[in-house]
Image (cartoon, rainbow, N blue to C red):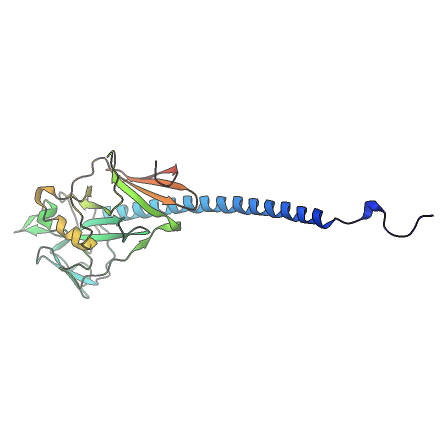
Length: 275
């Protein structure tokens, strides 16, 4: 006669078996979570790369068109060098002595590892009635607070998108990179400009670098000093420039290149240092 109770085949899991199932399930969960997180990080990296490329290209396009949205919050005069940039309520189009000379992008160094700044540039229009022909004649000046212009508008920092971090930069085809501050200017050729600093006007631009940059000076002071370097000022970057940014979350990096023709391209690399 069979006794009551459960048959052996109907007995539950033992404690050891339960623990094994839980361990395997946990490992699978962690693996799936890491896979999903890795894919998300890679997606965020690529989105950030695309966003930064678009930001740089937009700055260039706005500079080419002569666009500067100052809302009449400063006035510019040819006193100096550098030019005098004073805060105020000057109406659009009233700074007739000054032209919109371009923009400068500054990245790297202790102040710009996770961000960059884009500085509008002013220049004087003419000397004794004749159009200026060089940055030195124009006295190219940052429309930003500096030692000479403490009342000028403040130029803010633009955070690099999606946790990108600056690594290094160089002139294209150069064998050496710099991990320090790297600045370039999208600078008027002063050969054929139209419009004042406060109005739109198409310009021919050069991609220029800086002959010297001092870590002890502010960005604006460095920019304002360049026009005084004579023949050494604003070397033309005829091969373009390259920036390396990375993302620790994906162990990837990207070279963002700006050509002499002012086109912005990207090249994603494996590893953190754009090998």
